[in-house]
Image (tube, rainbow, N blue to C red; front, side):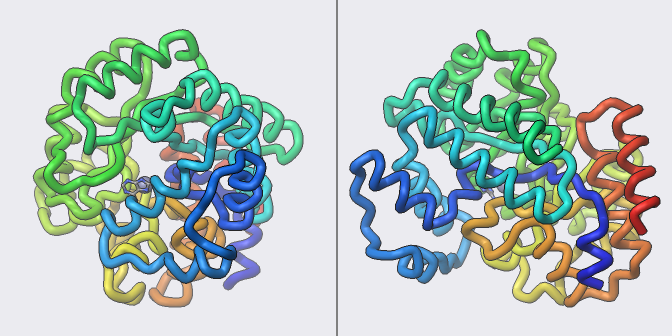
Length: 331
Ligand code: ADE
Ligand code: ZN
């Protein structure tokens, strides 16, 4: 099964660049920037990666990102992710970055955007991976801060495919960002939002009806509401599901209880993604392998998941068709 998975061409649609920050690179960049980190080794950092919930993880994730200061740091972070993704036969990525995590520390928006962008452009040539970039707003901050970020992004709008919404979900419902999402849509961007990861099905309804999103990040808790499932199926929306993330953040107790097989059986367009692979123990290939080991997924299911990753992307119809034909040809 693992060989079958390795052969499948894949797209990754839910990946936080800051969440791909491996401890070894964190140490190297901290040294380069003469920043102190409260760990003595990469092993010690990994040992600290035990989370009871999303907030536990976010506290460590933001602390790790604080060593990123220079354009070269954002370049190195992005390049390392693309190199790792290529090893998993990933052909296309749509990746998030959190500008506010950096601009709030005094790092200029341009420094972040230029480093990431240069790595994505070079990565297409070096690794054959096409990329789209998603500017994600932090939902624990006020909507005014998201508006300020959208304003900073204006000179670079052609680099961004979409805006997203991430960070602490419960207590920060999608409607809090109704106006800034409308402005992003007006600016020609696609819209995605984390919804139903820890938050209730009502947050997914709000993301659909108020934000009018084009794709749902996570969406696990949608399954608690049959009318919501019916709506997502009818609209043909994609869910970017992250199995190892769900396990590590205690969204599921055991991968045997992971809902991704049920999602497929309900007719939902589910995809497999790694979310924050440096923190959750695996990149997209490992996520496929983990669900294939835990759930009664058939080869046809795995092929569907790979095809869904392209179908649910923001590529053109012609590009999607070419990739989906490659999925079929590969297996
Ligand atoms: N930021 C990085 N990973 C996240 C996740 N899984 N949920 C919400 N915000 C995040
Ligand atoms: Zn995420």
